[in-house]
Image 1 (cartoon, one colour):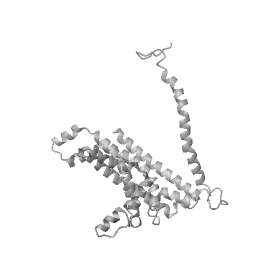
Image 2 (tube, rainbow, N blue to C red):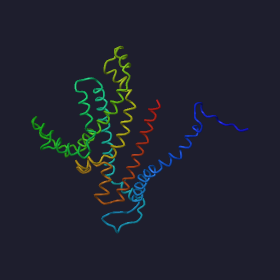
Image 3 (cartoon, rainbow, N blue to C red):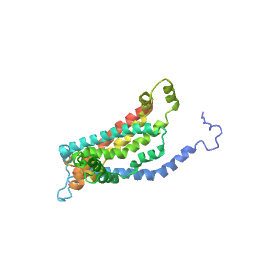
Image 4 (tube, rainbow, N blue to C red):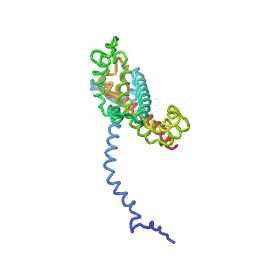
Length: 306
């Protein structure tokens, strides 16, 4: 005895199996884009893996062949690698702390009414649209230069000795530049989240006698938990690859004081012409970025389920 499933009430004849007919068409239309994206990712990754196991130095083309794990062994035994890894963690952690804390405070401020709020919002968001190279040049030559920079002029006006920021405090200078660029991003995300907070909750808390500080810690901050997680995840992925700011301002120096993983890979591959060693560093950086992204995505997914 065969049974047939009746189409939904109000459905036209042949409309019930329309999704099944559309699937091959959708697959046909999407497959070229998916194939291009796969090639775009797979080919560079495969070549990076291949070169990481090869002896390949552009200065000596006679040296070649399979190197096994020699490139990775040389990388992890090189003190510069651990210094670059430590600098990467310091840079990412410091910028995250500045942008999350500063973005939260600015979001609370810009959520309130005050004269010129729209202009202030525009000025606060503007640095995010400045290219990293331009931002680094502006801070290096216009702000932090000891002779004709703004900070040097202020110091001389106060009777103090101007500070050569990139020589005396190189990592702090890079952190300031990168944080200046990413603070508007955190502000945009957190301001959007704070504007979705129900005003009735704040009004009820105010009627119960809660002051601004109590409202911030017990109402506003818990409401921003998911938005802060998103900011941390996105910024971490991009901050692991900071390069232009370091290249323009300090070139990884003095010494290796500001060399992060991205600049170390660049130095190995394009300054020392060691393609094999640079590729090994690239593989390590890819693994590190994926591990960090995996744990961040899982953490945010748990927060979204709450």
